[in-house]
Image (tube, rainbow, N blue to C red; front, side, top):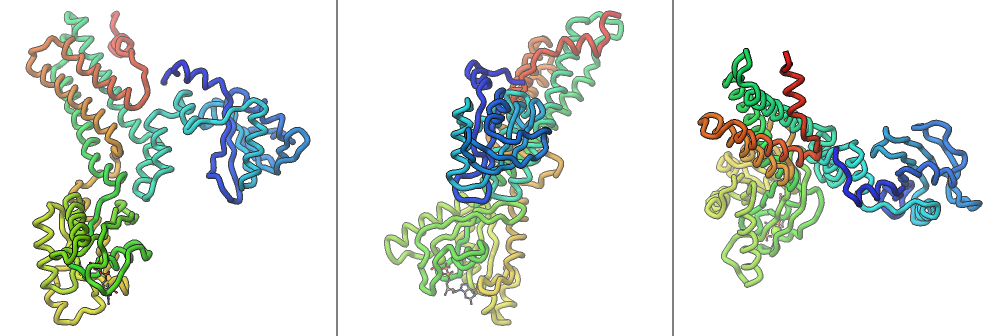
Length: 457
Ligand SMILES: Nc1nc2c(ncn2[C@@H]2O[C@H](COP(=O)(O)OP(=O)(O)OP(=O)(O)O)[C@@H](O)[C@H]2O)c(=O)[nH]1
Ligand SMILES: [Mg+2]
């Protein structure tokens, strides 16, 4: 558990209040009041006071005679509340005035307006959530795709934390083994077998490597995979962009060179969030503005996860695939557009390409499936039971832990450092994990030595 800083402790004594729902017109608003005096403060304004905890009560909210609303009130006594503090949730009518007048009444009786994230921060300070779980709440609220929603829910459920805590346990166990070896080298049982230590290190390295292997996929899930729609002017790129998006975002005309600047929008394709980019048609530019647009297209090509090379006949499709492949290392999917206009002869020639029609919707699902497979092929398949690393911070910390463990492994194998010195690497790895999770409960190595090794016989 994290101990609070001086300011953190002072803040924990306050009772905080805020509207948990967005401001504006809406049927309902949820007010949260939380802290040591939450019940005392709310009692002054709620009639009747709920007789039972965790049971919704229809009550009048008033400010000393003035009725403010009819609301549903629920009491969550600490420590079994979301953040560990006594909490009152008041579900009022929405809009601007009702929630604001109730907040004002609660503040006049001693509550203070909560700071951003303060309810969750308290949950961390009270040991109800670790930092990774608290971050997952933010990720869940920010999630723009189902994939991110699922990753955030798993992290909130403690998926990643459990995995890292297990790793930490294993590291501490190894430290204990080594400490035992150092402190009691003359034990009857002989020194701790080297293979036991070797295999324990091997398992940790493998576990860290499998977590780190999820980082590229995790980053794609968080940021979205850039999918660039490229090809010659008038190929139907903007039309395809609009139909994949399900709305008319890009301007479509029969005039070649319509799109000048790159347009970006996110599509939740199921497996990966896709950042679709519509670009200016690639050709020798007619005017300076078009030239700038083409330069932008080329920059996008360089940073793409996948490129859709679009053209409406086989010849220009082949040319487009060639030209794009020269400008980018990303996988290129050949897309034959305007399939509704395809003649049987064309069809024979374009067997290798995916055919789509922005007008009829034909082939769009197949295209999305192909994009998803191309992305999976670049970031690697992720085992479903491994939590994903979605933040650079997680990746940096785990890389650091892995580095330390490998250094220990090397020193141990080569026996060039005394074991107590080598085990400093293990301690550093433990600290790194603790810092990442936010569970700073450090000194339990000795306890393990004496409990699990039955020293004192
Ligand atoms: N029949 C048919 N026409 C299409 C289809 N997709 C696009 N078009 C037509 O092709 C023309 C060009 O479409 P756009 O989507 O603007 O093409 P673009 O590749 O974005 O063109 P630029 O921005 O100029 O590079 C328009 O007249 C569209 O209506 C399709 O699937 N079927
Ligand atoms: Mg266009």
